[in-house]
Length: 119
Image 1: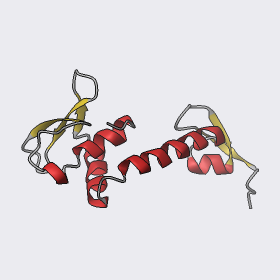
Image 2: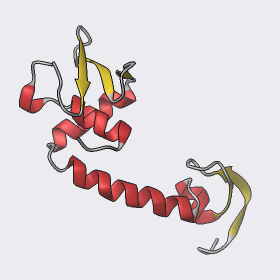
Image 3: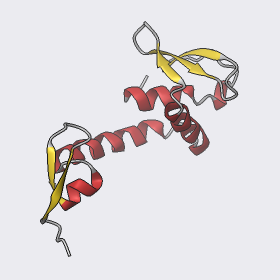
């Protein structure tokens, strides 16, 4: 049994900084201890910012990102996003989106996740 401070024979690299990971815990979570603390802090802040969106909107935003259906435009913090049925492309930013969904729009949640910035 490998203890929490033990190391493993196989090495992997940190998903944030690329350094070689040696501890079993770090290898399992794919982040070194310092990078893990940074990621956790960022995640807590992002959770607070995403609180204005419904769970459904956040799930749709994650799906949009996973499908690579959000692309940064030439302008800063402006993105092109593909509609859920794939037939339309909308221009969106943290401040506005030209999709017809208005209150149910999840494109801005996707931008928030991708950029980590609030409006």
